[in-house]
Image (tube, rainbow over all chains, first blue to last red; front, side, top):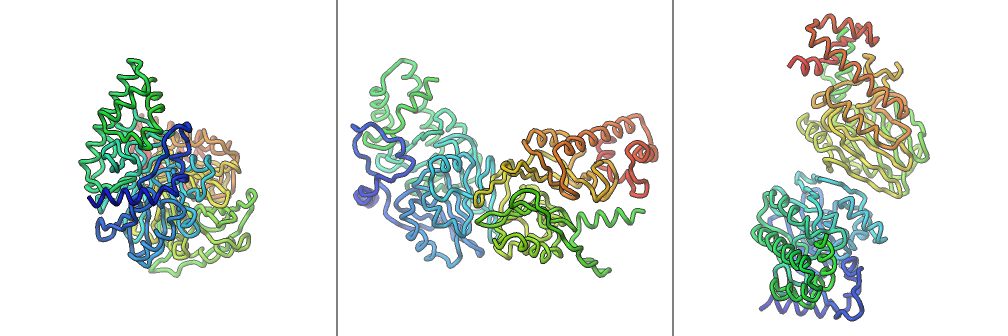
Length: 299
Length: 288
């Protein structure tokens, strides 16, 4: 299948750049962990509506809203992707990028900030900004918010909402009301590899995030009126996939919590996630999050 | 008598150009340093706070449109950096009239969601590009401001801007020091406490209680000279006293004329400035 071969090609291409997957990999595992290859997709621009596009490529997905007065971007990948993003936006419009939303702090979504910052206003949740300051990341956002923020440009509105902890403690859900499109960040990924919550970019509870709170957060998200989702990673998705993702988050949580209460080992929990939830045995999520999931669910 | 009030309301709520009368020439502005790289521009309209950084200038409130050139000249007298951001403390034209011109010069305007909605309803020029609901932070060239909504007060979209490093709070019109008539909020001068549409005489004290939990020394009011935190506390207590007194009089069935007399006798309000009308929202609320 084309999608699979694309993933394999991208995986090969990504080997050289794995070291800088950014804050996601900041918490490096012990040396015996297998090398992790990020299966980023090939660069590609896809139309969602007449004025809304998604740019796939190395890093998290980039969403671009076009208006008569300028462009609003959501997430801007790695610094090395800046020129490619700029060229792809230029192929759609001659208007400048005026605003950039960061869905969260991680480098595969925010490293590109610095390149846009001289002329654009970067916006993130207060906790995401604080994480970027803490990690001394470049291109720290000028504007941060706590609850809700809205940008109007060329008569079009983009709304950033914080609904509580999920992937991190500073996840912005960027909503395009007129287009009924939601850019979710990594709190909803359309998992590559095996798919579902278990793919390479599956359901990852990073530092600050919460497997306990993510379902409450998703319940709030699902109150928004949207049809199409631009996931943090992976191809475009539909609302029903977010509903399914929420259900699976709850199932994963309940299963791990039960095993933690039975004092089962990390190895047993890991095996369960692979067997029952199809989590990628070589994926970043299994490597990074089993300890923290078990820790949170033992409280 | 009510002509003075009409002018005051006109200044507060209306765009500057009148069809019948030639507009008066703008009053010359003055700029005053409050803290390092932090200035207040006064003279006409609401106070403008100027926050200067290496990467550009941030303004809080931008007066009437007719003050634009003078305001820009005053800013240029202290920095050659461009104005990057403007925060509107609320929707009224004496604080937002310059929005459109600063937008044309590439500035980004930020206000509370309800303030923007009021500006759209009022068909005011230059509605803000960015709105928030609860709190936002803005960082520019090492300067930091935190802006918060604490609930209804002067309007239902009042933004309180703090400069944590300088221990300064910029209040908008929910705290005014009047025009040279002292700090008495219940003195019926032009810019005493005024509940505009959307504001609340009932909720203003709760809002001010939340504000007073903030850590600041200096209060830059919506109108009038720069004040201290203790002045904000006094203002809050005066408003509560006034509200309590008026509420009990209305509940005792006292007439509007008696309330008028009380305001003049006990709170020193100017009888020629139609004091009862200034508290009309409170009267309406109590009588409801």
